[in-house]
Length: 145
Ligand SMILES: [Zn+2]
Image 1: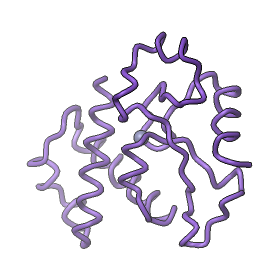
Image 2 (image 1 turned 90 degrees about the horizontal axis):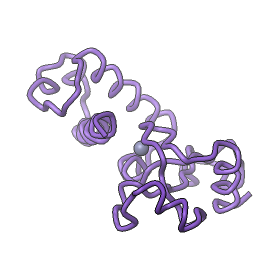
Image 3 (image 1 turned 180 degrees about the horizontal axis):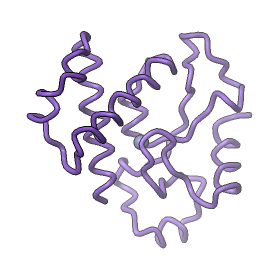
């Protein structure tokens, strides 16, 4: 199964495309008809709403590029934040980020609050910390529309 087929199947199955990682709804793709894109009132130039296909486990980390179960629809932003992470690392990052959002009751991005968190400070890698902040920002912005 290639990525285009996968996207088409997802549209057929769910009627819309949501980001599997942050939950952003109604992502657009060139597989959508122009009417659909217009009806969603999403600016095509706004790549924050572009659907991308992600290999959950990247090829470089041993992932199978042709396994349907290794594919996820996600937003452009999540795909960028995930980058070359293995699925386990990414899953861990999402779990920590979601816990921070819940524990700190974040409904807007508050870096001061995040920086004071014991959980956040227990993360050793500065790259991982940066990705957590980016994921939280993307997800919290999504929540507020
Ligand atoms: Zn996303």
